[in-house]
Length: 410
Ligand code: ASP
Ligand code: MG
Image 1 (tube, rainbow, N blue to C red):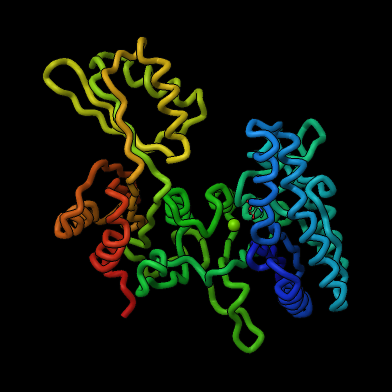
Image 2: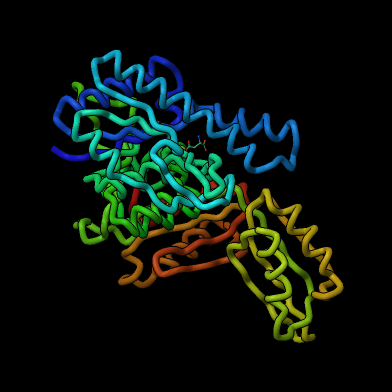
């Protein structure tokens, strides 16, 4: 018998039939003697619609009211799943963030969880009750509802699993696990039975969208075993195997490269001909960070006339704001021109095996060169190499790299 958190994403609760299906899965786990806590997302499309309504009324709407609106999606599904469970004879009860309470900081729209008191939940579970918890939402220090940022119900689930000392946090979604790359691009992509926290964290942060990045960060810190599995596929009333996100030591057959991710949400900006002097990077990136703009890869080229071109990448949706921010500083920074390109993609190869194996980056560069794909920017970390290329080459690059690292399924 174990204690499990079962989290269901938006597509898994998209309509009443799927909600009944979720209830059957939960009932089965409860009948097997497990202590189960359920975390749910809003029905798919609902959060987008709620966000859209806020934006339509006011592009610069109050963040507290945004939270009041968007948190409702999860409230609905929590109640519906509890009803569906009761229909199956399971003693279930829905819980909103404030009722638990799941306490967060005051950063409305992107709050971080401070503390969850797990004791009351555990007591209920031990008495045979199944709590159905609205994901994505909490209670701020101002006693108002907060939300955790898009995709935040993954984080709710992992944080709850840590708070109640769960043996596992199962994330049910519309894919049956973590793949070596996006199977829509590479049909020969393979499901990874196990992946290390570090790898998952890097993959999530560079574009793999299965888990919210912060939830992986948290799982790694709290040592929560996370399993990603499909809420659609099942065989003979059993879940199909998914992917387990675990400590590196639990993975016996380590590949050098675990996976390849891509992101088309990138843009590149070059600040042309800035004076090459101490403080210039601070003068450029300080104002960007104050404007809340995240910069990712950075390269600097020095020419012999004492000026330098500073190129960096950022989220495509931040491009206009970055341009505005830097243009306002042109006098202080002293650049000649700002050039940007949104037709770029970032391709990353990730694997803990890189720590002990040389040549991973070289293989990447050679593979791309053989396809005549130009590399515009490069960045590396201990277990990741990322390159920026023209967006049109995304598929070609991902396929070629998948083959080059021996990841294709037989
Ligand atoms: N419903 C929220 C969103 O779409 C939270 C989640 O699904 O994780 O971002
Ligand atoms: Mg999600």
